Length: 352
Image (tube, rainbow, N blue to C red; front, side):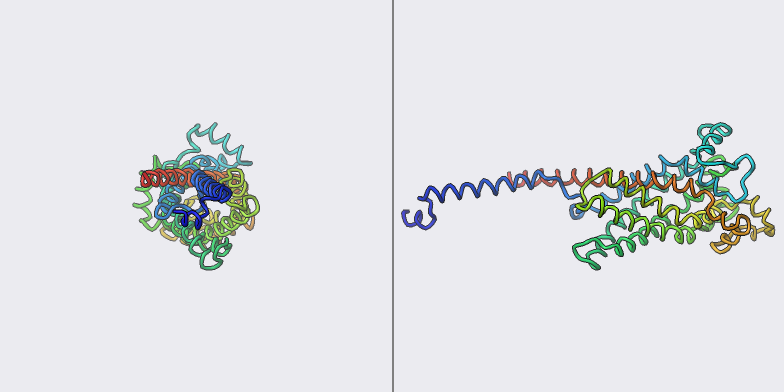
């Protein structure tokens, strides 16, 4: 027994004191690690995709629903030859006149179609973006953020988002137009399907992608760049998410307005505009693609026609993207913290 105590130094009070101190420090560090905030940028393995999808769906629905009246104004202001009663000076003038002449609920027509489409569209959008961003960043620039990876992930996420959202966009924009003839969402879907066929719901898909791919590349790269400046440690910081999202959305929205005007024309197929433009009767009266839409916009509105509704688009996108990122990051943080706490409880039960 005496030999063992000599080897371990247990008979030395100084060594016993040091050994006790080390044990206390180690226990304190372990307790601190358990109580520390979870890294919500690095979600628990196996649960990350579902977390991103749920957070993305909630963010998308809230974003579109809260900003829907401004979206209605944007659609009307992008009309190439609006009815005299639907010519507006600015966004606030448009909202005031729509409510005064058409009723308080008129700016919300088509909201249900948007909510139905926005949930799955944004779930795919954020889940695919987060997954691809991490995979590509690890390949291109291991251990660091890669702007190229952010842009590429944004492109793929847009393909999936627009595939889910495009039919809802067609229905929504037709119901938003002045003197829209449809009684509701189902009536609009049935009328478009019967008169123009199922392809009408994806007539603007290529234009939507042509617009949204550069939009999302600018959006994601600007957001990630601003996060590096405002939130370098990538903590949950609501103000930085809001500011970064708003600025990223404004820049991307202004740059892609010409394509948005063409998309609106393809979705709404303004019959009176096509008639006044001298289009022939029958099927040829339909605007069939991006090139045709560009020519029509230029013939009827000149270069200024490509920036119709730019003010409404920026005003819509700034709070819209700010809301989207803020809600998304909040839910991602909250869900991750919940998962982290559950894992701790299971770990404690396992030790017991």
